[in-house]
Length: 219
Image 1: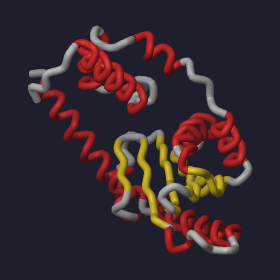
Image 2: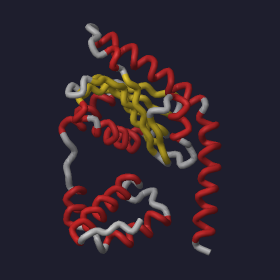
Image 3: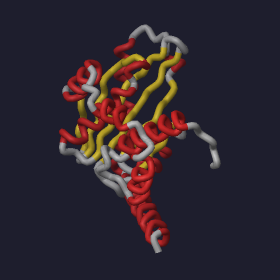
């Protein structure tokens, strides 16, 4: 792209990209050839002290609370698990993804969905947020999510989607609203599980294409 960066800018961008690759590949567990090539390029330019400090961040109290709440409010359907954690504030939204990562590792299930109603009081917004994780490299989460809503997406192993609920922001019975949203969400996810073989076929096709591109690139 021929973007001119000074030394400090280069270090900041390289550090962000390197940590992004680590996050997106689940600490390099799913790193591919392009990821490795990028890491080799970035590692000599990134601030490794920042990377090491980021990796040493302890799990926050809210994240632990949401994880424990999810354990007692889960629905297992075949080899998938759905976990609702109720209402959360927008500032705690990242905890959804972290809880989903933990549940995928600890539960022994193939695919995990963690969902919540998120409130952004500053913008007067309310929305359903669903974070998905899977151990299947062939499950096309992007295709699965797009069948539910266009406001979301996914890639290999992870995805997320959001549904606006602003119309219900002033609902007086929050428990009833949560029960309704949860029932509909679980119903959607169960139907997605029953149609998962279609999304896995799509994922297999995409994996074959990626491997073919990688093979041709190295020739």
